[in-house]
Length: 221
Image 1 (spheres, rainbow, N blue to C red):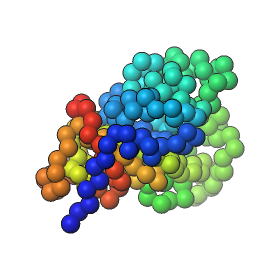
Image 2 (tube, one colour):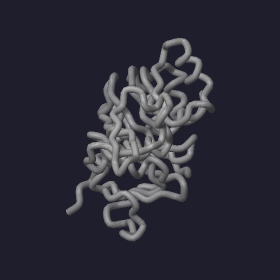
Image 3 (cartoon, rainbow, N blue to C red):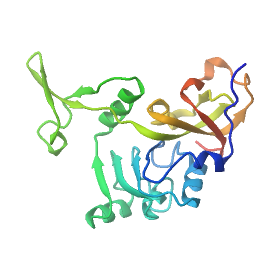
Image 4 (cartoon, helix red, strand yellow):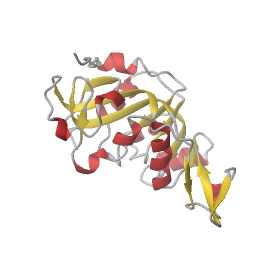
């Protein structure tokens, strides 16, 4: 019999500690696990290293974690829509590591798939290459980009069953799918929560083996 992984929001947040590295899915606010972010903000968790595609807006999505001073570092591909991120970075209050979006996705994927890293020419000759190893293959030079692991990943699926099988609506899959395998603990927020066996197997995009816990969340894209 499949394992029931459904827990309360309070129990989910209790699995996150101050100082943890936390991946959060989403692109802007699309595919963000909003209820889990709300619960994080309601807790006293701080000093997070946040791995995300972008820092959304000051008052929307995971950007509120920046505004409310919950993060000590951000690893993201874009911060321009959240003025607080740039302001805190320039004031020395927040460390920011900018990673090209494709490289960010592949570094997370490398962690999820147990790879030692990925090779890319993106960033050669720029500040991106600073401190990184270079490898030459067939006369071409590449940067070695190492995996990005996390203590906890918070992801969102439009539909999930109680054993963690998930599906998405359109672009809301974004970083959620790959992040699900790249952390020690993955907590999935489900817009619609179904019983075990209630999902059509052909609709499953993220198998439950990658999900440790499931919480009921808000219905959105």
